[in-house]
Image (cartoon, one colour):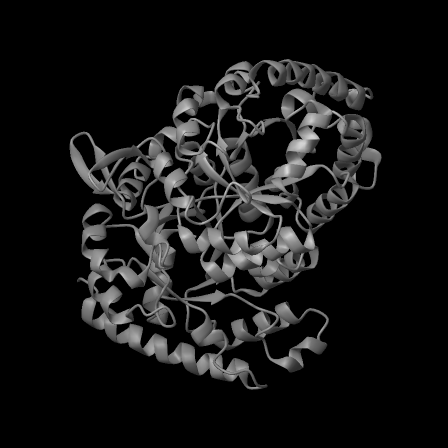
Length: 276
Length: 276
């Protein structure tokens, strides 16, 4: 999917919501356990109920991998029922030496047909560039994550050519030599909205994938106010708050209600904060 | 496996060789393709031919994941034929927010019964500690990797409390608060032997997993000379050089010959460099 197509979808749906498919067999409604493939059945109903309200789905790969080979089958079946015009994110946080990243790229982009993959930056250029050789596919590079551990390394003070940066700023700067706003996005947690203006100075045009709204305490209004650019430039993820809105037979309906609430809020922020 | 058991195995076999099972369907001998599960059949024969010469096997997870669900079956079957006393490393470079790392830990440690997993440090403490709660299981944290991209971030100069460090040094220092030499190792590429003395000052007791010998240009003698501690403290990985020593029907035999050559060299270095 191109950036233009993604933005068109955002305008059409008045939404920049990404729904995280962190599908946990222990949290899905009991009655689904009688299905042959409960993870897939849960996802299928969630997708059917919310596809007009969100612009992206983000399966968290660990939740599928934890089930071994059959988890990968549930994942592939899930991918297959996501409408073509919706952006898909494999939240896998991969990244390895060149020939290995190449294999991951083929697995997620060619075989499973994801639009994008989250990638960890620590190993540098040759761990990231193999993912950038696939037309209309995206790398979503970790920059400033929403978890408590982001303070350990991402906020370290780095000195480079006489100037001082946070490590995550060097990730933003160096990686711009590897790809462009047409094939790279960055993960920026809503829990650190205090850095978003600074981030927008460094990457004004890139899309940001934003976790951390809701359960983790980030504010949708703040990230929208400081993070939005002229093509929106935000995909705000919500998982638990939507997909586990109810643990009863009405889970899909309640997920829709929760997604609708977020979408309506996003509609307001698009009116308010999208630069014209 | 405990550190003591690992060291006993090293002494018994006079080897600290780790064989990388980077099993590529395009590189394995043609005649194996007629088998129902060629990846597994290749691994099975390699393991049978080399198990007395090495102390660890390290499947590179990407090579299995690239085949979808059936790749995971090949991986599990491979694990099942590795003798119990040999250390197993899932080279997966995982690392995510706490609840997600927990799922990865269960997948690799509980379900597949790997002894250890490689983990990327960028997301910090809560992405690593979930792996440390499993008795006799190990985190192998990326510190200074062997690929060209290690220069992008790992060698950045970080200032912390008035002192200057390389980023990889901060990874070594901070992570020692999370685990110990009994449940953590570090990845240190043999391509950067110039840093090994410095690394040994910071982590004198930890095992190092060392890629980059052979095809990537690292020297086995140098890493042994500067990296060995009193419990050896090294697992030196070799993949291509051993498993693809021949592409004919004699591949297992030739792999054994290549492994034997490395083991004999290691025997000499254990005599020479193991502190008494």
